[in-house]
Image (cartoon, rainbow, N blue to C red; front, side, top):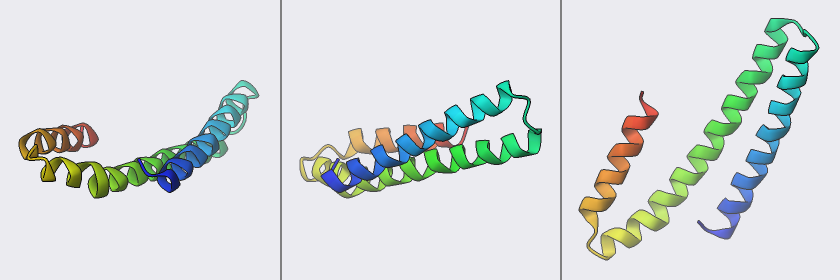
Length: 88
């Protein structure tokens, strides 16, 4: 992963980590369910953005490199596996 993508993903994960701790605390303190759910949605969006950033980097760097090396089948299998996991 390139340096900028890595920094961005780590920043997003730190954000998610903080939000998740906040959600846990909210549940422990019996915070109104709707307020907790809103924060949980924010956690999910943060994870989705980190995933998108990683996938973008993977497609633009790792996949291109693998194709240039003749590993198309391997890459195709990995991408298909990711697609299937994302759509379960």
